[in-house]
Length: 399
Ligand code: ATP
Ligand code: MG
Image 1 (cartoon, helix red, strand yellow):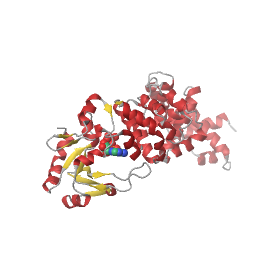
Image 2 (cartoon, rainbow, N blue to C red):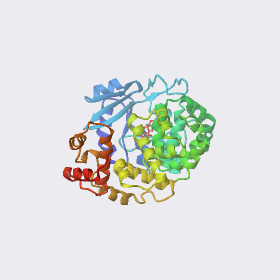
Image 3 (tube, rainbow, N blue to C red):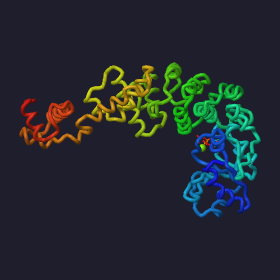
Image 4 (cartoon, protein in one colour):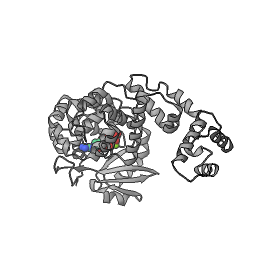
C-alpha cells in the first residue's frame, strides 16, 4: 500500500475501535490505482462529525454542514467525511442539506463517476460496487447511475467530467457524453466559483487541448462566464500545443485568442471571479504579449517587464508561433541578468538629487531626467554611480 495510506491506517483503526467504519475514498484511491502521486488522502466514515470530535482531540471544522471535518493526526491534516446522501437537489445545484447515513454503499452511490466511487479499507481491500476499477483499467469516465439524472442533480458534474478528461486523458463514456450534450444548459445554474475551480483544473490538465475542444462540442462553453460567443476562439486554441503553459499563461492565451482588448480583460476576468491579484497578473501578461507580438525585446522593456513576465510572455509567444515553448527563454534570461539594474529603486539618483543639482522646483522634468538616466545606465553609457550620473546629465544638458 502507498505510503500516504500507510500513515493514515492508525487513524482508520481508531475510528473502527470506537465502533464505526472508515475507508479511503475518492481521488486518492483513484490516483493510487493509476500509480499517480497522491495529493490528499480522503477518508469516509460512518461516524458523524460530532462522534469524530469525541474520538480525536485535534479537529478543525471546515465543512461541517456537508459532514466534513479535518482531523490532525500525527501532524498531517486529513479530510474525514461522514457517509451521506444528497437526496434533495434544488435547482440543479448541490443540495442545501445533506443526510448522514451509516451505509458505505449509499455514500458511494452519490459520488459522481465510477472511478471516484471506490473505497479501500485499511487492509487494502476494495469496495467497488460500481466497477470503478474496471473503468480505470479501460480509461473511461462514466457516471455512477443514470447520467442524465446525475447531471440533473448537480450540473457541475458535467464540468467535472471534462476536467477529468483533461487531467487523466481518459475517454468519456458515450452515454455520459450524450447526457452532457443534452443537459449542458443546466450548467447555467451553477455558481461561477464552482465552475472556476473545475475550469482551472481543466486548464492545467495534460489533455487540455482536447478538453477545451470538448467544451465547444458539448456546448458547455455557452454556460461559462462570458464565453457564449467565443466558440471560434476555443476551437483555435485547440490548434496550439499549449500543454506546457501554466494556468495563468493559459488565461493570457485565451484572452489573446478571444481577441479581448486590455480594457475588456478586467471585465472578462471579473466575470470569472478571478482574484484581484490574478487579474492583475494576467492583464500584465496580456500587455507584454501584445507588445511582443510586434516587437523584439529591448533593454528598457526587459527591465520594465522583469524576469517572470519576460519568460511567460516568451513562452506564450512561442506557442502562438508553433515554436518550441522554451525557445529563446534562456537567452533572454541571460540578457536580463546582465542588466546593470533590475529595479527602478536601484538607480543611485533620486528626485531630490536632481532638484539640488538643477536648482529647480519639482515637476514633470524630474521623471524625464530619471528615465533618461535609467536608460543610459541600462545601455551602459554611464555607470550607476551618483557622481557619474550627475556628470553625464549635466554634460548632456538635457532640458
Ligand atoms: P482531485 O484529485 O482533483 O482532488 P477528486 O476526485 O479528489 O480529484 P474532489 O473535488 O476533491 O475530486 O472530490 C472528492 C470526491 O468527492 C470525488 O472523488 C467524488 O467521489 C466526490 N465528489 C466531488 N464532487 C462531487 C460532485 N459534484 N458530485 C458527486 N460527487 C462528488
Ligand atoms: Mg480531492
